Length: 133
Image (tube, rainbow, N blue to C red):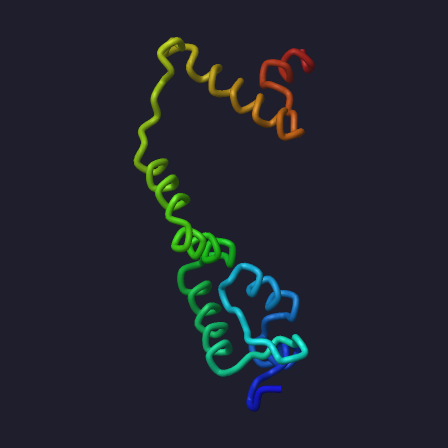
């Protein structure tokens, strides 16, 4: 075992993160500890500092681990970063074949189709109204 390095249980006790959370943080690539020759996670001072500053970052900016993980993913995946950037800048555009008055219903139907495809069907608003009438 590397001298001065902590096991995952010791790191959990020291940092206040649970061992399970430390594994999740590693899976997301936010803090990746070294490994012993036998495969045990080893947390040295650099990893402990990253865990401490990660907790501070989450608290200071009121963000979740998944937010920071996504930011890391965007740094590493330029195609994803470009797609998100384009989406953020893109204006909403009504399809040419859809009237102004029909645009809301058109978008609702598109969402219902996506939910149904994902196996999460939900009744439409007018279906609920008809059932309660």
